[in-house]
Image (cartoon, rainbow, N blue to C red; front, top):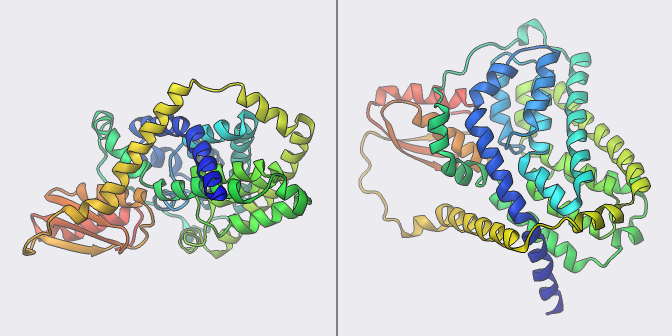
Length: 411
């Protein structure tokens, strides 16, 4: 009973501390979506060269895409003519940190950790891009070209869709893993004694190697990984090892590596993984040196004195809780109370779509299908990889398939 109460207290602590920062992060990411749609990203990044690689890195930092959600965008960039280096830089910098995860890092670990996380993400992405530029350049046969033909909405239209975008695509893409991350953080806080890692893993480099081995195959988004890393640090894990986990966990996972390989090739994928691993270990080591001079306790104590008002934090808890309720109602329970459709008519079509792994993917496919004139009632079955919709003219089916392929998925 004592452990259950401790688990509830630890979980509640992380949820309370991160809620308002996460809500604000979603709002910032939504504003970025209004003013920087995918079409703008492709226009500036879909070109070969070193400048495009640097742009890919800087552009990717604030974009709210997870490690699987970034794959279709990267696929589109590659088809638009982006070099392997620019594509890899985008694949790394985008999921490693965003507006929401930066604010979460600040809220749980302080501003020094948050800033160092961004700097490390930039350096890692540039290192990976340069490694491909030096050791695996595009051959003439590999040069990609083409335009994304998907119709793009105006900023005014996107602003009207902002609540739906935040709830369905942005929050929906991380809700499950975020909840798991908070629960895991609470579990670590409840079960592991104080100073656990200092007692049993008092070898910083070994700890970093362990975190590297855990982070590379694991699927965890940047936001969900933050409370887990914070709980590990509070139990004595050295900050460098926590940073290694924060870099590798969001940027790679076993599910998307095969897809990445199909985009840039096996050799480039190996360089991609090697660059992330080397950069994470080196920056983790340097971060430990920095923290050794400053003192982690000093950073955490300083941050605790910069607390936001309790009413604002409770407001964040309320808003985030409502978002969770809406998400799970629409995702899990709403269909239980909805009457099944009647007889299927000839205009009701179902397509198998490969590559959808999160709610962001589902939103991208939904938007691609809806961009075809005459399409209505689009529903995404993420669990089974299917999209069903009503089509006024069945002859437009090929156009629908083309739009889905343009979005970076396989039909």
